[in-house]
Image 1 (cartoon, rainbow, N blue to C red):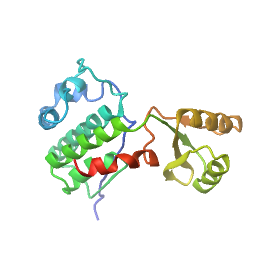
Image 2 (image 1 turned 180 degrees about the vertical axis):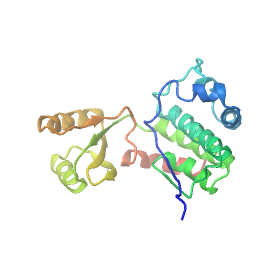
Image 3 (image 1 turned 90 degrees about the horizontal axis):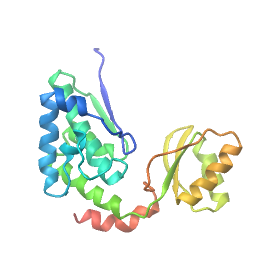
Image 4 (image 1 turned 120 degrees about the horizontal axis):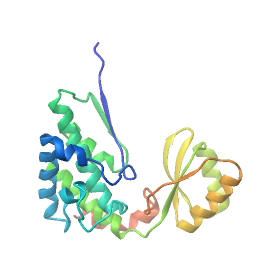
Length: 213
């Protein structure tokens, strides 16, 4: 059996300023995809995706997750089209967190126009959530769950990425305090450059509005 390819679509936190500039300048297929998404987004957003990814001042920042999600999504869709042009097709796809939307497009489960609506609605939800912080912790999830329960700090286990890779979320103060404790024990934690407590109860009050978008 020939080798098969799986595509993995990452979530928010993987963005950086300057991503996709070279592809936009040199790959017509990629640029056409970004332009198409930019037109679809323009009916729901007041900033230009094309200007942002081209390195021009669009008046927005990739540090804001409600901006990062449309940007990451568009780059992922553009890459899908570039790979397809080169006859590279995925036998399976998986998306982590916000990356699920691009994975659904790649799998044919969502039309691009519907996916853009989901991304735009998700961006509105993100902007409404009270700011927080997220921390990567290389510990067993059961051990970590017991520790945050004992600490009674309001922290939540937001993601279990492997048997030794978890992400906590909560208020910046609670995350900073728990991070200091773990670092004092020699645990190699990492504060994520994300300012929304994703995958926690903080999102729940906004879900009804998201469902009706």
